[in-house]
Image (cartoon, rainbow, N blue to C red; front, side):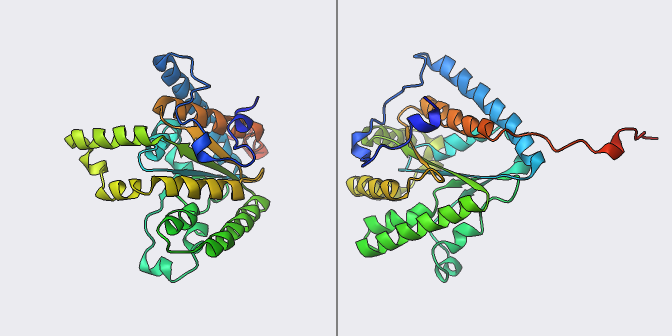
Length: 268
């Protein structure tokens, strides 16, 4: 089974029915799994070089998940070997005053990848149907309108040459508690800790419900969701790296044709 099929959500997917601690790709040896991630990351970097040189495709990687699910870690461990020239990471925070004066997709659309570019969204347009719904800033009718708009938006991206891959980093409540406690215990990790994370944790069940609704409504072959068990950081990286590499290999990438005028060129 292809990795891009194995981790797609099933019909009528429910977050709470998915095991965040599952490790189907693990060898059972953490050290070996880390070596496998390193090897996959190197292959991804090599293919990205061809991807950038060909300058035809556009790739968007969306990372969504609860706090501490590993969005930053994924960028570093899976995509950290890529030449910065061809990749860009965008971390979406609370919208600014200017962004609030536009429609909610305005700030998203302007960050889309250009030809030859890979863009990573650390959080994304999905926050506009997640945190907004959990805190009752919008009602169910508005959620449905936005989900329909997101479907149309992602279809447009696909039809105009952007490959869209969306990863839900699924962490358990117990594992999140452990990671938050680790940040509190280690002064060197205090910079990662935000008291707001504790407040958002109180709405855990509401977030699981909101994710369930969003994933079911917007999973599509042209903009697929992948549900990534994220309790294990190493296995999380292994799965995401395997999927990204599979997609890049499936593009049958090739360097641009050689330039005939350079064949006999001599440098004096």
